[in-house]
Length: 474
Ligand code: TYD
Ligand code: MG
Image (tube, rainbow, N blue to C red; front, side, top):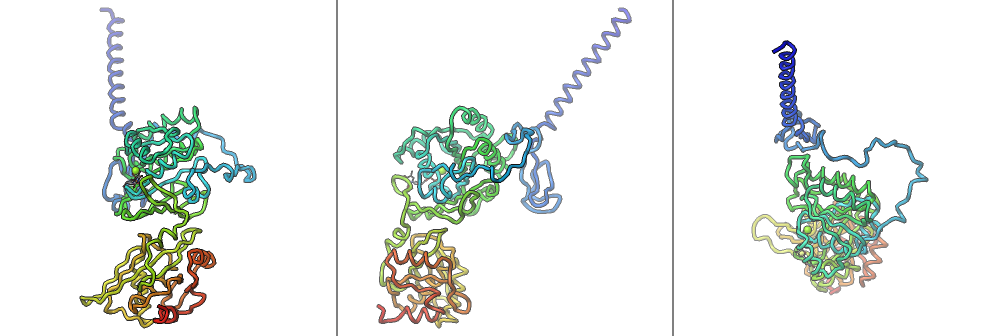
């Protein structure tokens, strides 16, 4: 063999070796580096860790590490294509007022502030079984061209519900998929080919992305999937509803972690034992907050309740001691509710206080005010308070009704059945005025209550007790 030949052979060997080393290096890079798509970030201090730890090694905070995406992600933010960013004069910005898309259900439009806005992301939160999927299917049937992304139920299960509801199924398309990246890939051609009026994601806790290792429903997955979907909705100007489950214990990866990501948060509330459901807005970038929609759940799904006061007072017994009707404001809407109280002699040394639909702390405070300022002794009485219909009152305007219901039960004198009571009770036993009194009085009159007991006619709790609970009134 000549010198040139042996030189060529050794060069060939060297190249082979180099090629092998390159493959090996590439392999090692793929194994150790390329897979590092996610990192665990402490939500308290921002410290990073490559794996999940119960306690942040930087700040020492417990349970604060949440998985987030790193480089190498396949996901491309549709809004970040090195666009030139130019400021726009506010006068030239398009107004949303004329571009609202009606949901076809009056109570839903009311809580949204007039309908959906293009690109709006709505989070619909509620306990499992409360009726979220039912409401969404009813909304879908009223709108033209809706895509229902079903992560929880099969198309057949949705079909059974649609048949039970007897709704128009023509405009509803079902996409059964739990990978958010697949969903977005499948959505892209849809957005260009046809006009989608609404996208429903039921539920966000079932979706996952391969870029994170956490399981479906973990904080990291829920947050990342919601972010990717909302980017899509915003880029394509399609309204989107994300369903989020809340559990009684308050799930860690529940809707709370999404509230800052979405434009509107709707909570569906209600008691499984009662038929009514309340849809409440707690955040709305495009409309009023604290607005409520009232529904009743029946065999044909959710029906709108135009006059909630009628529903909540329908089973009231008149001339019964321990009952008072109050008018609370739910958003811009006044509602008449019945507060019931029962007192009974304490069998053990320590008197018990129990409430349903009213704050226990507030009840303890009102019992103390009643004893000290109105001469109603409750030290040897168990007190039970219930808001009829399973509603929860969060307004202080119900204080006076709670106090009068308790006093009425202790004295065994019923309030005049045509009396409506509202007012906040202070620690000195004074009755404070509450907001929107004219609206409350109007609602009370509409429901047939001619006598108002509130901060305008009565200065103190003791005056209200002595003047409204008179034996001759019966
Ligand atoms: P669903 O919408 O599946 O609840 P979520 O999506 O919030 O988990 O509602 C389930 C409940 O609603 C179930 O208990 C049955 C009841 N329901 C009715 O009472 N009437 C109906 O017409 C429908 C469709 C459901
Ligand atoms: Mg459901």
